[in-house]
Structure formats: structure tokens, C-alpha cells
Length: 293
Image (cartoon, rainbow, N blue to C red; front, side, top):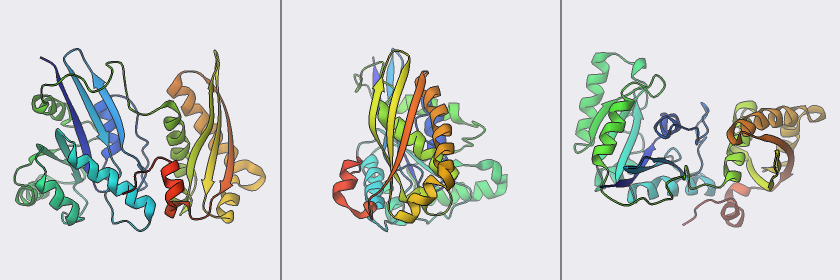
């Protein structure tokens, strides 16, 4: 008997979905920063044993879209409701319970079993937590509720055990040695984007996209040429920085992580290019792999 299924993680921005995904997968497949909208795509992480294959799916935080890119991010989150064998709806002790009621209504209608995970319980007390659990029981009566702390790994083993119990019998969906559905270059773009999110302030991280133009793997080294796309000329100047120092620093931080990820020496070249208002241009969004209606 072999079990297989899609376990999709959804919820509002900044509740800890990517931290949880990386924990459940056992590898860092999703980039993590304290900024909202860090995750832009739906990213699959695959866990294999001889007896089962769990396909975990991290999704962007649910938000009301202000431009085309955010519409695509919402499409990724909503598609995760449709094909889940088990749905993990993640919230925390801080956010308002009625935040994004439209999306919550869709979660209520889903046929799949729902595990409601209340994260960051170390920031609450027993009394507040019990009250929160009662409120969620009313909103999602069919869901099983689990208080967790993704950072301190509290209750994660219980969640993994329950997921396995709920997983349907099925042959594997992917090759048994697959770790993700994404190609190597995708992780290069995500690592560079993570460093941009960490290094620059204000709107810069949200206004840029990263494209890998060249990825050449040789015996001892991987040669990568990456393009950072900005929306405006002023942003290009900030990204490059005085005498190119900012771009150099980001490149160095990214290269170290890329070397760790591929366990190989990396030569990384980065350039900056302006594509005006790319976040609202269909042709560019499709080119960058975003899902449009």
C-alpha cells in the first residue's frame, strides 16, 4: 500500500507558511524574510519514503490585489484550494480572525480535510489561546485545530503524523528522487530575491524581479548570469548603489547561499535593467512564470 497526495499550505501573509514548509520538507525550498509578500509563486517540496510521497505546496500570502502581480499571487493561493488532498490553513495568535473573509469562505467550502494551524503560540497565553480556538471552531467547524510554534518546532511531529493518516492511497505523482517541481534556475532567482528583500528597504524588494539568463554547470563550477528587473530608473540607481557597492554586497550574499544550495563553486554575474511597470504587464508576468486568468 503506497500513499500519495498534495498537502497545500494557505493563509494570510506573514503567518509562517514558508517556515513551516521548509520544516515539513526538511530542506529550505522557500525563502523566508519578515517582509510580507516574500513568497510570490506556488512552490512544491516533495518528501519521499518507500511507503509514501507527500507533495507539500507553499503559496503566497492571501491579499486583496492592487496590481496584476498580486492577482497572479492570489491565483496561486486559490488554485491550492482546488487540488488539495489535505489543506493546512495557517493563522497565528496575532492576526485578526476575520482578515480576508472571502478567502476563508472558500476554505469553508473545500471538500478536503482541513487542519487549522494556529502559529506563534509562544506569543500568547493559555486563556487567550483557548478563546482563539473557540472562535476558529465557530468559523471552520469541520477543521481540526492544532496550536503550533513553527520556530520552536512545537507540535510539528503531531501534524506530520496526522497528515500521513489523512493521505489517500495512490501511486507517486513525481519520480521518487524528486525534491521539487522547480528547475535549478528558479532557486537561484529566489535566493537572489531573498537577499534583495533583506538588503534594501521600502518599495525596492516589491518592485524587482530576478531572471536567470545563463546557468552553465561545468565540472567544478556553475556560471550564472542574472538580471535584476526594476520598474524605474531611480530604483536601478539604488540597487546598484554608490560605485556599485550595494549590488556587489547582494551578489556576494547570494553567491554564498547558491554555493551552499548546489554544493559547488559558483561564479555569479548580476546586471540591473529597467522594465517600466512590469508588475502590471501581462506579457512580462507570463514570461516570469506568473499565472494569469
